[in-house]
Amino acid sequence: APREEVLSALYQRYDVIISEADGSRGLPLKLHTERDPVIHPLTTAVIGVMGLWGIGDKIYSSVFGDGRDGIIDDSYLSWYLNADEGLSKGFCGRCAIVLNGADSYKGDISGLAGLEYPASASAAAASIREDKVFSVVKG
Image (cartoon, rainbow, N blue to C red; front, side, top):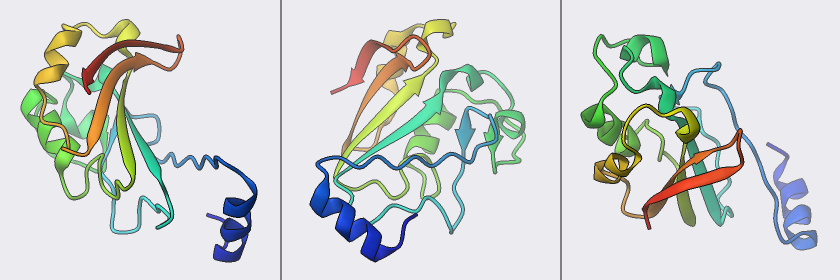
C-alpha cells in the first residue's frame, strides 16, 4: 500500500480510490493470515470476491491456506464467509461480496441465498468475465 502521507494526499484529490489485493494463486478461495488483508482505516467500502467454481472440490485443493481434507459445501462456505481469517476479515464501511463465476456455476444460484453471510455485507452472484450480475443473493 502507498505510504500514509501519499494516501492522505490522494483522499483529498479524488472521490474514489480503488486498491486491489490478490494473493490466492489462482484458487477460488483464500484464508487470510495475520498479515493480510491490509485495509486502510479510512476505507469506506470493501468488496470481497470469491470463486464459485471451487464448490464441491476438496478444501485443500481449492482454498489457499487451508489444508483440511473435506469438501467445499454450503456449511464450509457459511463458515468461510464469516471466519476470523475468512473472506470478510477486515471488512469496514460498506461491504459487498461478489460470488464470481456464476456464468458457469453448476448449482442453483437461488440456493446461494441460504448461505450465512456477514450481517454488514450484501452479496451478488456475478461473472466478472461477462461483466454481469446474475442475482442479488443478499440485499
